[in-house]
Length: 390
Image (cartoon, rainbow, N blue to C red; front, side):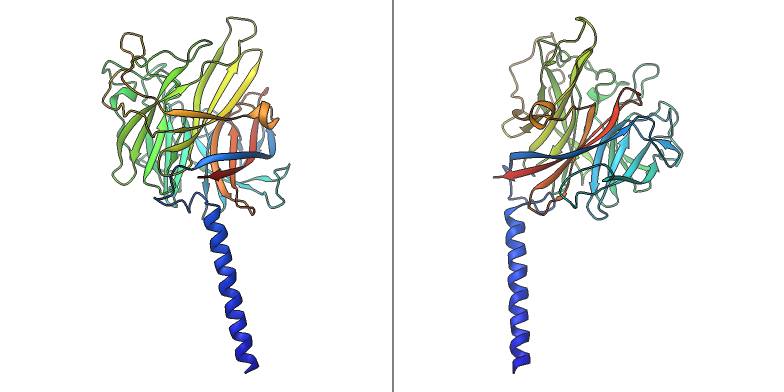
């Protein structure tokens, strides 16, 4: 009798623990737990958890770690994949498997550990030749299904930007069709600008849609970002199951926020990465600006496609150089400035991804920098805790 009572007590306790866990999980949605009905999520708060820096020249597995322009998280293995934009000039194009340890609640030296390197191969199984690829964005949609975006190259021979599917071993196995307006090799009255193509890549939590965007405007869509004008970036949506492009939207990149020193020297601003927040068109967008003599300014916005015009059939947004009033761009809401709001001196941040849920229910957000293999720059991992609410 006592044994039966103890068994019933243990059973009731187990049921209560499971119920508590499910209740807490429902109150704090992770990327995996966001369902079709969970829309209109918004960022309520972001807290810095720390940063780790690797100086230029850091070596791992006989490769130089650098150029980290994209990052994605493998939930099944608890590893991040950090993509180098090396055009097979320093080492073959590749991504790194990275372990990030936040078990003590903060990101400190020793918490970012490189665990492997995977070299990218073309559809024939060969390493990409020098300057044949400019990898920028990476997204693991689910185990075994990974996409990589590139900016291409229009300096010598036109090498088109792409969004292609790769297997876990790094071999390309499918090319997604890209509308002609985004290709250097197609002359359809509009054209992507060199080094301003697909810098970003993300997928919705339900893994139905994949998104990338140009860093700045296409040639006939408007100007590139300047000190006085923003730039209309094209935001491109793919249906993952059908492997086809779908809708396009306009994301307005901010004007360059700081004057270069001395005046007239180099300065830019661009949309460098995206991270989907929900299944209904809400994203984090990271804009990165550099001004000579001043340095980097990196900001996060929350942006949405809801209410924005599908411009896929509009060949040129500003054919005469004047932006059209025939479309509504994506709305955007300022979230933070890495330096002013987090107290971080940002390097050339280009990669952004959600990681696992933290013990307190918040989502882990990781940003990573592209050091351009420059001895005066650094590879930087930044960890943040994000609170989402409806």
